[in-house]
Length: 172
Image 1 (cartoon, rainbow, N blue to C red):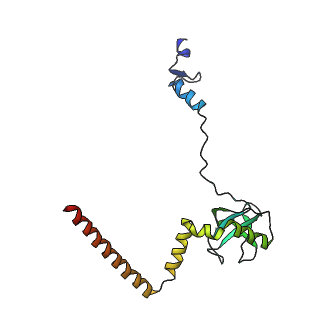
Image 2 (cartoon, rainbow, N blue to C red):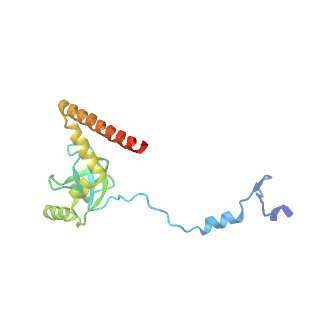
Image 3 (cartoon, one colour):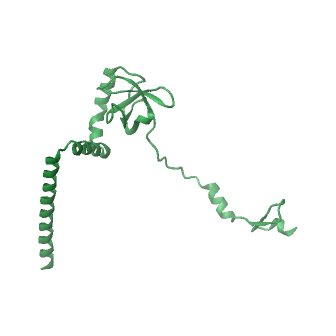
């Protein structure tokens, strides 16, 4: 049968329907494509990973994973808290890791955190700065918010004046 060897049509022997086959060039491109995929996720649960507690009594604290208990919980520790188990749902992993052995002593953990400069790395990260600003805004009272509003109005006026000067200079 001449249709069986046709380069454009693929014939399913069990069916009477003719199905167009893809061109061989596209098949060879997909087979020889060897570009390595980019890994989008880089925050893995590991010993020494710094995490942020996202709810509960320790909300907002930075903790370090010192051991993995099971697929739901980790043993976490921080300089200002007692070591304990915490569910992964309560933790948000950060990009910061420190080099520590499994279940280190408190003194070793504190030294490793100071050596890795965890506090400064966190405070200089955009995520950490954003949380600091949120805390500061939440602690403002009504009068502080009023003063902030006046400062914004004043700043806006100064910017408008300078912009008007520049426009006037460019126009003439």
